[in-house]
Amino acid sequence: MKKIVHVEGMGCQNCVKHVKEALERLKAVESAEVSLETNTAVITLSRDVEDSLIKEVIEEAGYEVSKIEAA
Image (cartoon, rainbow, N blue to C red; front, side):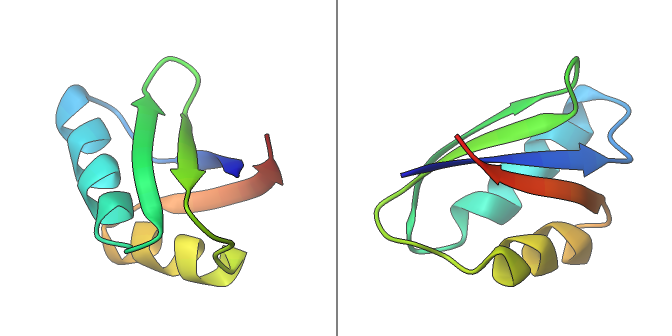
């Protein structure tokens, strides 16, 4: 299962790293590919994760989520 997360507030590769690390702390996340160019994170999940939990970990890292969609 994959989800595409639209992330606002990233301005550099360090931001990308913070978002990636935040997502990878979720146990169900198998991989997270974060793009500064498209302001998205494509996450591969081993099981379904509530969108609210994904949003919460990204916001705790200091960024905003504008949309989460199935890939």
